[in-house]
Amino acid sequence: MAYGGAGPVGGSGSASTIKQVKLERESELRIEVGNDAPLRFRLLDGTAEIFGTELPPQIWLNFPPRLKFAVFTWFGATIEMDGGTETDYTADETPMVSYVNVHAILDGRRSRAKASSPDDYESSQGPRVIVVGPTDSGKSTLSRMLLSWAAKQGWKPTFVDLDIGQGSITIPGCIAATPIEMPIDPVEGIPLEMPLVYFYGHATPSNNIELYKVLVKELSGMIERQFTGNAESRASGMVINTMGWIEGVGYDLLLHAIRTFKANVVLVLGQEKLCSMLKDVLKSEPKVDVVKLQRSGGVVSRNAKVRQKARSYRIREYFYGLSNDLSPHSNIANFSDLFVYRVGGGPQAPRSALPIGAEPAADPTRVVPVNINRDLLHLVLAVSFAKEPDEIISSNVAGFVYVTDIDIQRKKITYLAPSSGELPSKYLVMGSLTWLET
View 1 (spheres, rainbow, N blue to C red):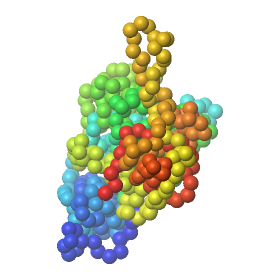
View 2: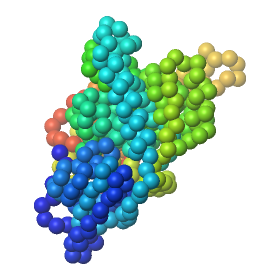
View 3: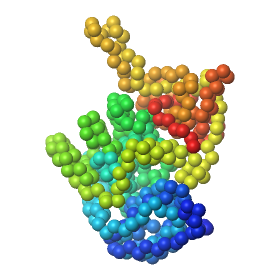
């Protein structure tokens, strides 16, 4: 549910200033909410949407600080804003017509899949769309639009997020999937009722490329099993968001994802070279369409520092909510109650089994126990559903905890968790994901 606004909200400590913006047909208002205060916002008349989700008329929505979004209208609308914005401007050149044309084609494929016999697994399979392109090209925005438009038509597509750097479904450092049954809330984003989450533990695949590929395969296999038993999900298909690393190893990982998820529609945002390379390499694959789309002019490029800040906000949001409306619990456990593991490290084979002069290489998928010590301070750990340590890689996670204190003398660990009570599992998984609570 979106946050409804009650009283006026002023920006930067000043008195409230209400501003009206009239939008012509097929234009959009691009907004960046200020750093210090939320923005109240409503549709006065006409029709408009945010990332594919229609706005309710006359209802105030509260957008938290630092949020960036665009309000698009097909037929014209009047918008009212109350509060502080960093920037807001109107644009009449947008790629929305080409985006909605893609949606219409996907919609037709879903209808054909639904009409075919459930026994014919190939024909009853809806579109598997993968959105690719460089960093800050609007991949997650286009993914949201395609999902919301599909949900509005009554489909239940599966959203797959492979972008471990930012994380649209849950915190960064994870790959995840979730069914989308309603248009995505413009304020709160992707719903978290039933996410399937695998913990990679780092913000870039280069930390452990083999582990990233293994987890992509695990997630794909799990979705494939769900599709086998659910004709509706199968016909609705999936939309896969990817990371912005598209050269060298990043390109290899893109191809790995396309093939692992058996994607049959590849949407390339604003990259002629990438589109050409993918068309060339995928021409031998059966029934894979590679389509180049224009990136939106509203996309803002972010440097490494801004991206790091965004990661930090996403982790904070997990524990405290978008508007500080959640109350996480501080819990204390004995060292002996919990078992911490990391994936990767340790020799693959003993020296005696290697050729003379060869050095043992680290095994990227070996699960290694970790001693609980001060090194865990400020790390975000995943709570694994694994029943045994050797199941950690193949198991999804229940959630996350944040280590706030390690008492070596008393052998006690203090951690922040979304709720009180015992953790769903005694197995915790660490990576390099840190967070400094401010």
